[in-house]
Image 1 (cartoon, rainbow, N blue to C red):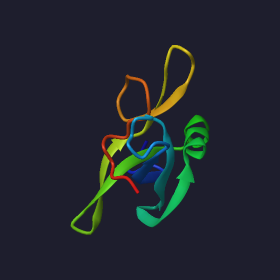
Image 2: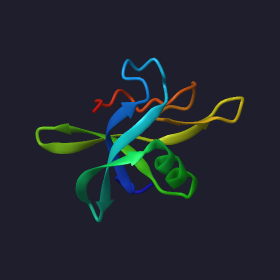
Image 3: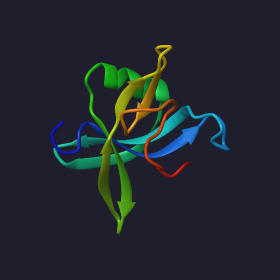
Amino acid sequence: MGGWGNYAITQVRYWDEDEEDDRLKHVKRRDIDDGTVGEAKVARRRSVLMDLRSGEDYVTALEEDGKLKLQEQVRLAEDDDGTEYLRVDDGGDGDDLGGLPTF
């Protein structure tokens, strides 16, 4: 991944609002093109999984002082049963994008 990648994820929504279900339902992502960041759009978890499988790059980003700050690369992780998760680290079950704000 060079620089920002293809998309920046800035917010997340879980299936269970209390976050007891560790699977994401939706994310807010922004297209990144030649260093320009687009408007946030809601995308389904499934879309992000499919994009990552096809070679697209995602990073997490937080807004600080009116600018997006790059955080961590999003990876696919798989548990022993073959279930895929979106994670910013290399292990564990469930989706974990590093504490992004919810919407």
